[in-house]
Length: 97
Image 1: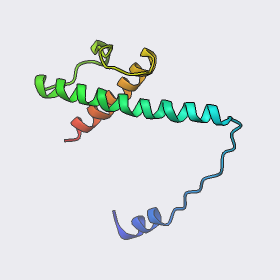
Image 2: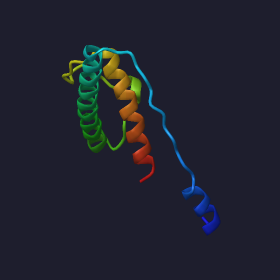
Image 3: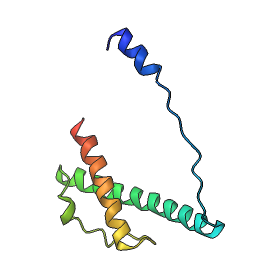
């Protein structure tokens, strides 16, 4: 990157706007609890996938991974969405090493 391009990239300003929501305190608390559990589950899935990677040398295909034995308060649907996100992040990380 030359210095002019770098200066232009650094001079950009990103703005954000306050987003009003009309959720009550109970709904906001449910969302916060779900996010905490989602992050815990993502961490457990990540550990599970790293174990598989270090044992076999590769990550299995997403559709062939069984995560029903990973304990979580999330529904199976949420767990599989989480699996797909974690799998893609790890695949990208491994590909860039």
